[in-house]
Length: 330
Image 1 (tube, rainbow, N blue to C red):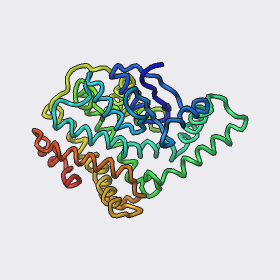
Image 2: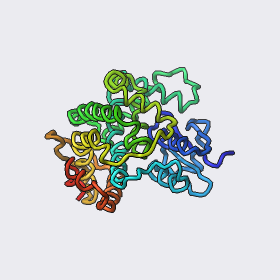
Image 3: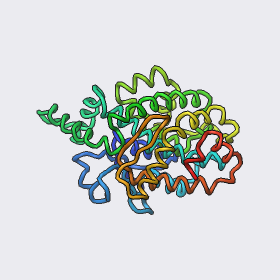
């Protein structure tokens, strides 16, 4: 038996995120697809009903992908996934959280919010859960899965009235990311950061679904190539300093990250601290409202603290001011 065991699912962006990170670190592990055959073993160790679940030789079971990556980085320092430039390291935390919390909304919207994507996603989920042993009433089972997932959409902000924010956000983000990756092997230079793993996990899902996959393959080829390489990435060189990345990294923040995710994350954090059940704000001049997300609030609060701790890093304050991020961090 290997030292690490990872329960996950191909349909889980966070499972793919952790699996790719383990591969990058060169850590031997056993991948255990969650299904009816492995459910008893999963339940014996899990605290919450979601994957990933990483069982480690010297740490307690962990189901938080960000925490998993942080502890793996501490236990296996090389090859490093933390940019040498302290400013870039702070920005990587923001981009990782963007992927986990905002890009995940865009993935959910594309997968479960429209046809034919939701039917195909339902078929994949059914095959995974049942180990390919499909029932005779396949359509009925598939439709039950789709119904259950669609009922969860409002929990992550996927409501009809929010489409005017989410659709442009998807196209804008991947257009900007494609331009950046045309110039850089990874987000911060020659090797991947935690942000790369988080984003690639979400993109891997989008490439399974026909509608976003067609868009990405036709309009964001560098994103697609990067995502495929991120399945088992290897360092291709050193990290770059912020000054060498700023030309294409700054627009990613100015026109998307600091325009959508950061205002929402800040408003959601504040609403959660007030005890509000819903959070509403204007995003790029368009009304956006959803149920407050408590985990996302805690995650963003920790990112804000980490960025503040790095405030004296060369170039960070000027970059955050330039891209319009500072109001959402103070």
